[in-house]
Image 1: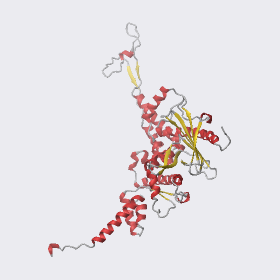
Image 2: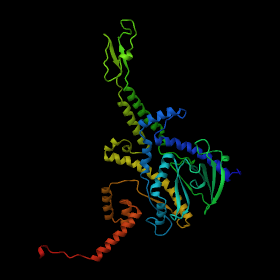
Image 3: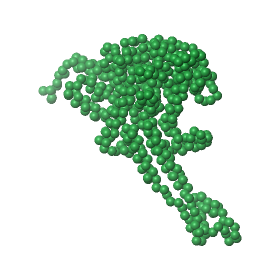
Image 4: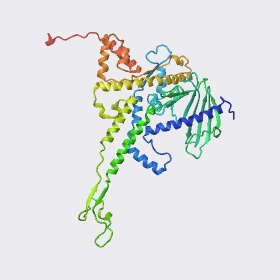
Amino acid sequence: MDTTPGSAAWWLAHLLKKLAHQRTHAKKLEEYLDGCNGIPTTADKAVQQSYRRLMSMARTNFAELVVEAVRERMAPAGFRTGAGGDENGDAEAWRIWQANSLDADSALVHRASLGLANGYVIVGPVDPETNAPVITPESPFEVVTAHDPVRKRKTVAALKVYRDDVANVDRAYLYLPGAVYRLGRPVAAETETLATDAAAWQFVDAQVLPEQVVPVVRFANRAKLDGTAVGEFEPHLAILDRINFTILSRLEIATLQAFRQRALKGGPTHDEAGNEINYDDIFASDPGALWHLPAGADLWESGVVDLGPIRSAVRDDVQDLAAVTRTPLFYLTPDSANGSAEGASLAREGLVFKTTDRLVQAGESWERVMALAFLFAGDHERAQLPDLEVMWTSPERFSLAERYDAASKAQGAGVPWREVMADVLQFSPQVIDRMESERSADILQAFALGPQPVTPPNGA
């Protein structure tokens, strides 16, 4: 096997190790998203199951809320390309988008990127059934990429590894410029699907791509200059741990208080015959039991622990989490929704600024996805990356009353009708096209009917 730098075998070994590191990182973040973080890895199965049960009762999944607060505001509405007459959105780009169900599945990419630090998309040749290039969201547990050191968004190699349960084999796809190499190996005894030893994999065949590209695009969240990415909540794991621990402690205290400690003061230890008294039989824990205390004896019971300070500590930690993640507090604590309108507006402002930044980053990746799709479709005019632009719905959300009030004022100020529909009323390009067609039909119908005669009152 040729292991010289740049060869297929060399890239396989390099990317297998990189994928193993990425999986470890993503697994840690996934545990926070699933709410099962904190389980000791060295504990036996029984301890892990008991701890999971306790954690499932104690957790409030704030990590998921931090991710979803941004994700639900990331909605592509269309694409502009270099083709003429697409200022309001390229219809062919939207057809490809719809053919791959990306209205729904784009959320999978955004959720993986925000929550697990990385998401991926693979572009394939044209599918005869849909007559559109295939675009598939991919998991960071299965896909990893390598990038050009100068143009850091350009993918120079990629690897996908997964387990084929039907054929009972592990499969891998190695993407290099202009070619895809298929590899396989028998399923090993361990459940882990990744063998970091490149020698365990056997090359099956290779497929030549229609273009000299690597059709895999990375969606990195909060990427740093060294190329690493972090999850949306990852810098604040300590606060999440503190919240979970405090809630867990509260449940433990509440559980233990159900069995308060009791003691007998001044009671004899032996009866009149000199036999030791068995107080376990005397003080039976039963609702119908009647206890008979010896003369002069007194019962003591431990007091109730006040859980108020613990609950207040959780609220303080949640407020800290909302501040550092720029997540409005009403996402995390419903009772905060009763605050002032000005306070709510200021809280949303941080979320809007954060989401706008994520839209810019994700937009660059979606533009590369669509450029690859048009390249595989043979449409080189639309495949020009500098001319591609994602059209996002506004991350700012307004009520219908606010939008229509602003629309009437904008029209009064002379703003063009389509601009009002898109920027103020926030309709998608497809809806605006349909509305414009219906609007033209209404105008023509009104013109054809002409002015209608007015019937005088009382038949005069």
